[in-house]
Image (cartoon, rainbow, N blue to C red; front, side, top):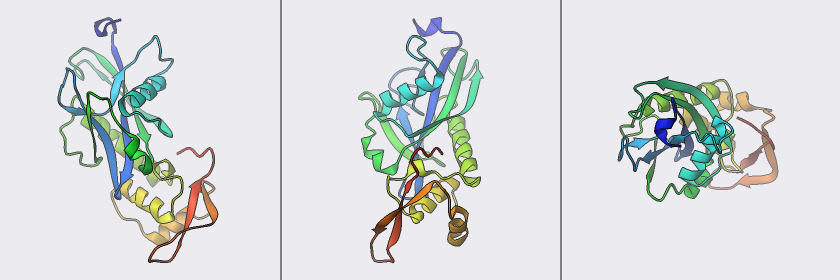
Length: 219
């Protein structure tokens, strides 16, 4: 089946987020092939009806093929459509975002023929192909909205983390500092946070209790 036989063109695009050095990062891929060869874009790909049973299957397959990793959280954000989004023809794209723990950044390898870059999600520093700048802004806004409504982005953290790590992840997403005492009151007794008995992060400051996410936790 050729692209011309698919009408409209159905795709998924994924904003893959992580937190590194207290900054929200997104993965961009430099496209190898036309259209928009050489330009930067969110990882994405075309629905393959013969192997994909859903658009989420497409997103999972595309993300694994372009990054080499499986992510702990994938969520659909919005649908974009129109005749002018893609020079190949009328297209529909389901936008997803995915969260990757910071200790798995090194596992992202990318396709052998494409360059990848972790960019500031708020100011990527690259002109994005197609309408992917809009897609990225939409994904960031959805992520910010969930965190502002008290959702905990635990999928961005290592398997063991401190409350300071969690606060810094929230700050990276929201783009602003949070009051420590207010933040601690907000998450106090949250059932998603499991303290690890006798486990502390030790350093020059007071030892910090280590936590893990509750089994089955979903952002």
